Length: 219
Image (tube, rainbow, N blue to C red; front, side):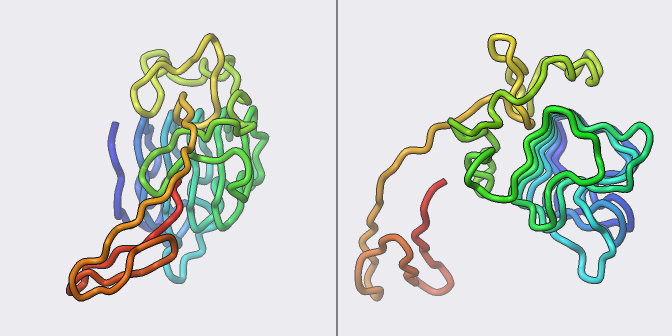
């Protein structure tokens, strides 16, 4: 239940050779081997928006001698997971999407969902820290309850948000055992004095000094 933010290291920006349960890794960097973590066991963790360190030779967000069960890899500048195949490397019930460097490489991944676009297997709203699956994503039920045995028993029953890990015996991929249904709509905001017009989608209005408002679709 920790957050690793803005961490910097040579190997494993947030964590090296450890175990993390229900943790967030974000904005971490490493000059070599794993911008967020290396040689770790990760259970029900989220690795999101970890950039590539300038001049780095790192190739993945998480790599080398790893165990990952029900983790979410989203929006990272490097690939989700990558390493030369090694005995003991294990990836189960994970989802890896929207990572600029790719998905899951060089692993025998079990019951994982990998996609490089937002069309499917989508995370609901990673920009706002909502890592639920979007309703209707085909990844929703691709997980297997059999792999929960890979997680130490004391950490097995709760997802990233601390909610039950199974729904009627079904395990979803990724760190969150829940989905969300997007809703449509449009908000128009009247501009304050000094900024003419009305803010609508794709407008960019300066309210005052360095405060701006940007219309965007959500999620």
